[in-house]
Image (cartoon, rainbow, N blue to C red; front, side, top):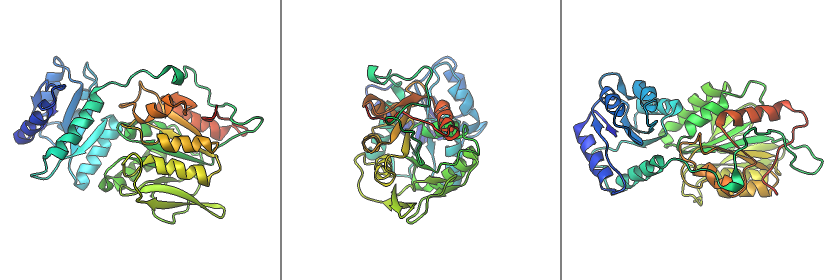
Length: 352
């Protein structure tokens, strides 16, 4: 379903969607009220939603849209303005799955159409069940042996996420109390202009300071460091300190920022005492870095398929047998707290 108060935009989006023979436009609406009325009896897998419309608006209607019978995935179409970023990130935190910037006049080209259809295909396909070798734990144990007769606790936590990840990240971070003192790194696929707003959102969710990474930033306990939108966050060891660096080298996934360089750099800098957490997202970004982290003696956790908007990134590490814990964002947060509270905590790594 396409929901936008502009007839021109609705018409363009409808033509783009209908150009893919695997997709059907179930309806269009010029207001959130109209969309809710249609969705009650004419369900959709994906809702393309403008937030700024007359009436109650897309943001206010979002919870009701998500609660309609088909529980659709919502793709927010947002503007490049500061207000647009604020509203979009709020929608993603509330449960919208992904965002696509609304182009300037003349920007509805073939490249934009390809991006739109790619996102809609991924959201329309519900996450598959995990492979037999990577079953989620019904009652996950947060404490497992990692090395023979040796306790293992991570010095640093690195979280990677994309589509659906902001909602999952909020659920995870809200489970961390003030006693959790490990530094947290976050690489979230977002446009560069959204990162300052995202950093403030993270601070609110976890009640601790959040810095946007810059070259030379020293990583301190109890703080969050966020990858900028125009480069990869990588970590180097400088004497006893961990220091952030920004890399613009091409990544295997093609994403900027990318999760792979972050995890791979931790494998070298932390001698295995790092934990990677992969949340909802399209593609395989993070899988290569996860393997490097596991090979160095670290560990990787992943969000489960049922709670993911798209089980691409977490599914890739799960199917590769790299994830020692596969569960919901809330329980991932509980697991992190269990590590911080157990003086002799042990955690399963990806090594077999």
